[in-house]
Structures are given as structure tokens and as C-alpha cells.
Image (cartoon, rainbow, N blue to C red; front, top):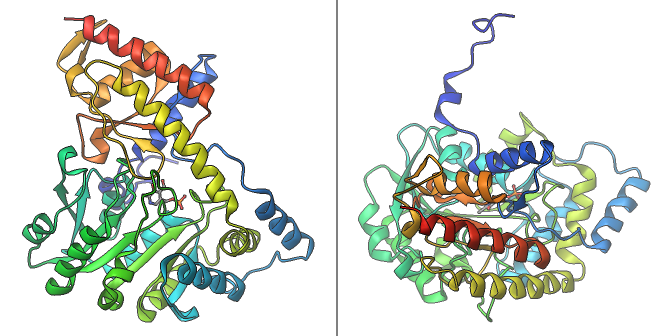
Length: 405
Ligand SMILES: Cc1ncc(COP(=O)(O)O)c(C=O)c1O
């Protein structure tokens, strides 16, 4: 068939492949060539899904739960989501106000498609998770990027939020703890942002996928428990992926006003239908079963976080702040840019990331696609042995760059 016959839609011109998935692919290619590459790029826990969750899935299989379920999830799963929201967030939802989808990504895309249209603007604090901007573009909405600074802990201030509001602004995305920075908002900060949203009639899209992964005693509060009046214009979006090491199972969920959830169900009913029935059984167990597995993973992430921060802070030229949550650090590598090495000009974080991948056998994600061209993202969701090996490579690579003209 000719290229003309298979002409792609203009929709595709609005988006690009995910930068994080692109790193994974580049790394896979190098590994196919037999190269030894350490992966600091991947945004998923290296732990296996906890046993009791896997058992729930095998039980569901054995019980023949292999048929279509209601589009937005089984009653059992919806009730599990409701239980989780009450237990962890002190929030009360009814079954018609929650919907399960095929991963947090799917929940976000459905939410954007349900809520936004041509000309709508959505405030996205930078650094931001790569997919927001592209998903908003798919929904014909425009991301209005509002920078935050490392000095302010990469957190959006109420005054910056207020200043970014224009006549077509409809919503703000709050992702706390954040991918890629690991920054997270204190209760008072969230309350202040919530008050701006209330006063100015902004919707809040609260992406909570990392809410349980916090360190040094930091407790992530929910904007809705601080500003209950926001309930009618807030969508809470979360996922089993990061909290329960379930990235491959694909289960995300949304809680929000009934009419929005119903609209998302209509979209889902005409596209993917229900998330996998087996995954739903596993997710119900994850959300309502023993939660000690999450605490164990957090203890291990915390140990790695301390190690990574210590190693990074010992590298001259690297600056890094301690993230409150998630499993990423987001060091500034600006001091290494503007140099030339081995025929390469290192003008941006992606030049440096390409250099590290090719010359040091280390995969990191460049900050450009997160809206931060002088930073890179390192994921510490990998073993201590690999962290040590990768950080040795990082240090040697940067020292070599620093010695170049
Ligand atoms: C901030 C953020 N939100 C949502 C997601 C979606 O995760 P999933 O689709 O696996 O639930 C991710 C995954 O990387 C993320 O980092």
C-alpha cells in the first residue's frame, strides 16, 4: 500500500513519542547490540508485584472471571477504590463517582477528552510529567506552562498560579509528589492553591499516582481534604502502578463529579471498554488488602534516595535538592553544558544524556521534555548494586566532560 493510501491523521502532528519511552527504546537497542547499559531512565518500581495481589489475580482466573465487566470497573473494584479514598484521603465517594481505566495514563486522557475542547487552556507547572502536554494536545487543549524554580522546591506558588490565569483557562494540574522532580506540596501550600482555584473557578486535576511514596516523614495531604469546597470541580486521578509495583497490569482510576465520570465511561465504552477483569481483581486486593508491602517498598526507596543524594552531592558541578517523594532525583547539570567533547557539542541536557548513553553506558532522561533543559532525571527505582554502578559511570562521565574545553 502506498504512503498516500496510509496517510496519517493531522492529530499525530500534535504529539511526539514519550521521551521516557524513547530512552527505554534507545537502551533496548544498545543492549541488543550487546552493550552493557545501566538504566536510570525507567519510571517503574523494580520490585515484583506483592504476592497477595498476584494470588488475587490467579484466584480470579481460576474462578473464570474472564468476561467483560461493567465498562467503568466491577462493583468490587469501585468499592475498593472508595475504601482507599476514605482510608488514605478522608474523602467520601459514591460508586457513580469513580471509574477504573487501563492505567493512570488512560484515566488522564479520558478526563482530558471529557473536559476540554479547542481553545481551552490548562495550567501545567514545570517541570512536568512528559505526557500531560501531549495528552492535552490530543484533547485540543493548550498547556500553559508555568515555570517553578529549584529554589522554591519546584512548587507552584499561589501568585504564579493566579498570574497565569487567562479568560480561557479552565484547569490546573497538580502532581504531588511530582514526576520528574519528586517535589511535593505542604498542606498549607495546597490549601493556598486550592483557594485560588475556588476564587477563580478553576478545575483541579490532581494526579496522585505517587502520593504514598514519600520520605523523611513527609505526609502528602490531598487538596480536597484541605479545600472540600473544590469537590465539584476536582478530578482525583491515581493508579496502582507505582504504589503496588503494578505498572504492567494497567489499572488507573478517577474520582470526581458524577457527570464527568459518566462522560468518561461513555468515552471508555466506545474505545477500550473495561480494564482487564483479572487486573481489576488484583487491584481490588491491592487497594484493600494488607498495606505493609507499600511501607516496605518505601523503606527501600528511602535508603536508595539517601545513597543517590550523597553520591550526587559529591560530584563537583552537580546540584540537587532532596525530593520529598516519588522515586526520582532531578539534578541540575547546567555546569556541564556549553562544552565540546569527542566531536559533540553539549549544549543541552539531551546532548549530555546522549553522551552518557553512548560513552558511559548510562541511560538518564534529559530534562527538556519535562520543561527543564538544564536538568536530568535519574530514577532510583533500581537495585543498590545498579545504582552504585550507574553512579560510578555518571561521576566518571561528568568528570571527563568537566575536563574538556
Ligand atoms: C505523574 C504520572 N502520572 C501518571 C502516570 C501514569 O502511570 P500509569 O499509566 O502506569 O498508571 C505516570 C507514569 O509514569 C506518572 O509519572
